[in-house]
Image 1 (cartoon, rainbow, N blue to C red):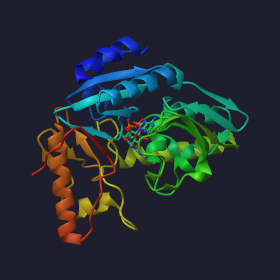
Image 2 (image 1 turned 180 degrees about the horizontal axis):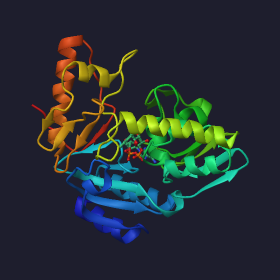
Image 3 (image 1 turned 60 degrees about the vertical axis):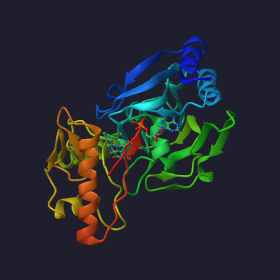
Image 4 (image 1 turned 45 degrees about the vertical axis):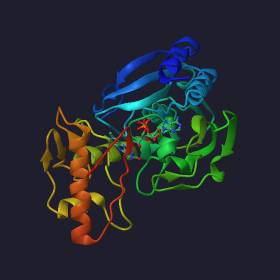
Length: 305
Ligand SMILES: Cc1cc2nc3c(=O)[nH]c(=O)nc-3n(C[C@H](O)[C@H](O)[C@H](O)COP(=O)(O)OP(=O)(O)OC[C@H]3O[C@@H](n4cnc5c(N)ncnc54)[C@H](O)[C@@H]3O)c2cc1C
């Protein structure tokens, strides 16, 4: 089956929206990215399986996206199918101290709901954009607190398109890493919280939010931290020390608020962002002998010199 055949099958056989030649700029917080061959919203597990099955049959690349808040999508788009999780994945419910949540739920909604019920454990995640699925795939959080630490169990659609459940304790969670199967799709999870003091939860969340407002370029389109922090140092400190804070290439700028953020000042291309990343990477390596590794994920072709 060709790409065209796969797109016809997706439109015919998947109950959810299928948008052809859909700009990825609409699906990333960076607001950057050319068209994907298709963006498919799978409403149910059956639709998700069907969409993946069609892509595989046709040998068409596919990937799952949450809110695209950790993604730099190529200016040339993505020659493949982007799958986003729809209706059935956007529900969560609270049972005592446990939150059962679909992977398509916005993480911030779970954080607020937990707070409103006086459940502690998710305060560290306040202000982290994106979905629960994206958070698990990235093990989102701070430098020393992350979502993996409160995952009681996670259900994945694995490479064989079977649903498998794992206990959170069976997964290796590290700073922005996990060994969740790389081709698996997180469909839901259970987060274990604990009853706490509501005003103390609010205070911790407020402190964390005000720290973010002070130290991050909130409001300007970005994908959060561009590089992972190296051991015992901070990527932002190193980039700033290299004198790159505020540097602009095209429409992209190394933020003058936080040097590990590259912001889109309105008309940035993915190549503008990559050029700044390459500059920061090269200069930090030359000056301090430290190799920065990207935290953001790339989607689509990036042919660099
Ligand atoms: C202003 C700003 C602040 C940020 N602050 C933080 C922060 O404090 N801490 C932090 O950790 N991150 C932060 N981020 C980065 C980002 O928000 C997180 O990585 C977030 O968890 C990504 O979620 P998402 O749904 O947007 O995932 P996406 O960006 O859409 O996807 C990220 C990766 O996860 C994969 N993925 C998505 N959904 C699934 C799924 N259901 N199953 C399997 N794989 C999946 C994708 O294929 C991709 O590889 C920030 C970003 C911004 C823009």
